[in-house]
Image 1 (cartoon, rainbow, N blue to C red):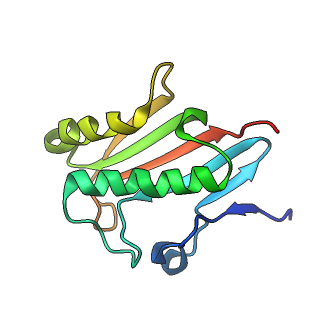
Image 2: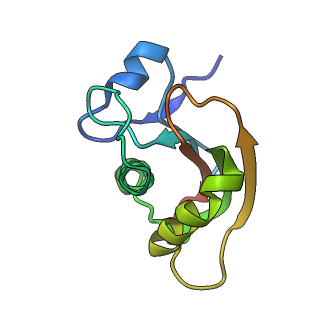
Length: 131
């Protein structure tokens, strides 16, 4: 088995260790980022929805930065939301602060019943910049 080229952000948060997963893997010019939530350093959820979404993007951007990429390099996004019927509009207003300009990445939004105590999760695939 090939060794995985794992990307860890500075100040790894407790969820990676507790749940035994890698934040991101580089493969064939792409970066596959695990779902990022609005967790504090100890792994607990940020209680305010807006701040939770912002912290999820902060965690995502730390991984992208560590890999030498930015959100502009993201080609595919999947977001998960608990109770999207009541939370989608509030979440999407915050998401737009991080989305950048067109052309936008592809996106799939999924409503779920549980996210480990969180209300929002974002996972992405990014094309890594060529040296």
